[in-house]
Length: 415
Image 1 (tube, rainbow, N blue to C red):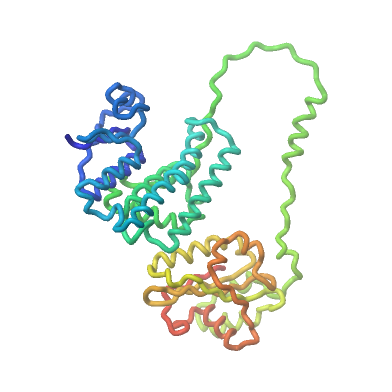
Image 2: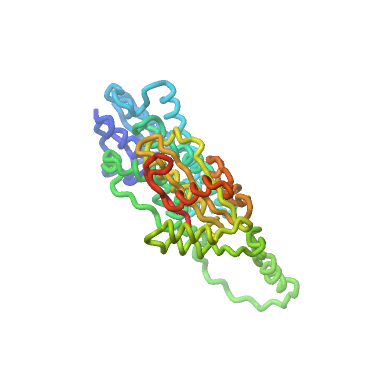
């Protein structure tokens, strides 16, 4: 008897087993005549899964339900001679860890966000807000792990990646727009890298990210027209109620950023950014000289930053994505800062070094509070009376190569 997977077409949870089957070389049949709401209510189906849920895998030894359990079963077929389940006990445990994490913390919250909007569950705006917050917290944890790892466990795809990417696929396809996922650049890189692997594409085909969160499904059924009632007498208190509600909902004035309250500076940041962008030749003589002519040490401060965990930067594109994500999260500081990030070295481990110009005498508190990457770097204030430090600033602005004896893998500017 062949393996038979009972499910409806397009079930992303069922894809877990089908993708695992591609990796281990197992054939699974998927009946094309399955009808959700019909087939899964038959006595034959309920013998395999008493509560009628899909997917269900029919095997010669008996049936298996729950998508993760089915994927685990399939991944161990053909003698388990594959790397899907790791090469050691600790890798096996970590695969189980990420599989459970993505199912409970990511897929569960995606479903609680998507389901009410489609009318499958009752909708509540406060509940949705809490769900999105919980999902972001989970994605942030995943993003942090992927900042220094190409895959979840080890150096190749495992069952953890199959289960996690299939769980993410529901979100990317339904509610997680580009604006939403851009907060988690390492998750984005990971998802598109894995989902486009040949064994994934055989099962899921071309994947497109949703462009908008679906509107909340209307819960109001059409009501028969009511007979006209006699006009009621005006009641003054009731008439005042809407006005009161409007007054309560009036937006409060937005608090000013403390940096906007600093004394005016003769250095105009936009003028420096314009000079930097428009200088095409003699950069040292024009842009660098212009920077030092403009620089106001009373109104601005310069800072060197060095990544604390350079020994983890073994893969070039992962390191570049790490820096790119940091710059993306720094967007809230664009009005008050200018930055250069250099990725140094011709091979791993790559060194990440930066130079930042901030409004004010210290690193602004709102940046330290909001951008978690700041804690991943050692920050040192530049002493411009030290000619060596001043020259280092100039070299970082102009992308001097070699920089401190090393080639530049890349140089990124924040302006």
